[in-house]
Image (cartoon, rainbow, N blue to C red; front, side, top):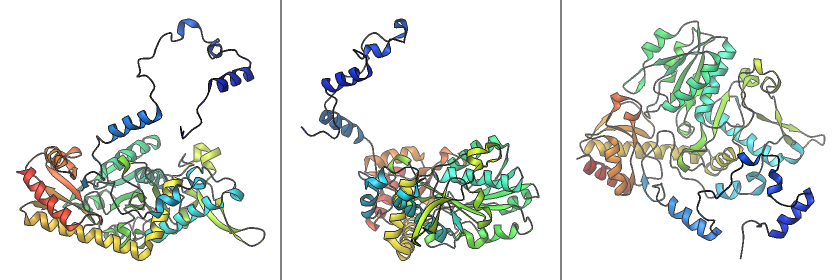
Length: 449
């Protein structure tokens, strides 16, 4: 029988015990008093063969609704996009799949170059000068940016738009607690950050302003106006959280004077996979490159003049001067960063732009289809691939009926804000067809009564 691993035989067990000088497995636990040892049988099922176990787990997994069994219009931070087949081929190679920290450049050139290419493409997307080798996810990257701004400006007040992802807001609060930061939430009007309130809260004690672009509701924030507000506040930093796919079409935040741009590259080559793991990116200016959390890969030449790659500019405070560190992040999401790099390379600049345009066009078609069907949609400003539809029933009820019809409905905004009760945030990506959109509008109409 074929095994995916080498099972231990009784002889193997006997040989190992003899090697360490004990006669039985029980003897290994002699130092533990008998009265605290478990004596009996564990209340678990009897062991199954590998085939039987795989079959049972597969049957359990198939009880889930997912994007392969259902047509999904769910977004809110995790999106179903086209993934080039080459992505899985590359990341499944053992030299990448099992790689960890590339501290030894002489044996890690492949991994280091892959990370360097990721950094380069993130800089091109965002319009920034420096990017790190990735972070755990977009929310983590955003919270790290907030802490960096406080450490750099020596100020404690941070203005955060309520139009950012609510889970990112939670992460910011968690990170800010240790630094005793004052987080001031800025309301939104008609789906956009309230710039009047932002202006009134902005003062000399403000470390940074946090904006999401496009924001949680899919709306495109006016970064140029935010940039103008910050001209008189020379030390206050602009932090922008961005969907990198949207930047294939939208003007990059770097051109609006952003100091730090962060986000999640899940949209490139990373499946939805139950919400994680993802891959955060962190891009900034040369001025701040020694303050960047995590690690950076640099390009150099060896003693023979050949191009090579090394970890560089490590902020040593993260390792040995913890009291002065702005971050304790020393790792990165290398495998997922590689997946995103391969996806972006396979698509190319033109492909990324076309993919972004398809998202915008199909989302607009869907919004018009909902309006034509008699639904009320919120907000009339420019948006990327998400929009809000008002329902007559709780979103959870409608989504339950949609599941029965083979559809995964949009996000229930009432979960985060009572004022958005019975409002569904719908995401339409390039993988959705006209027929799927039309049928989805019809099914939502029937479920909504």
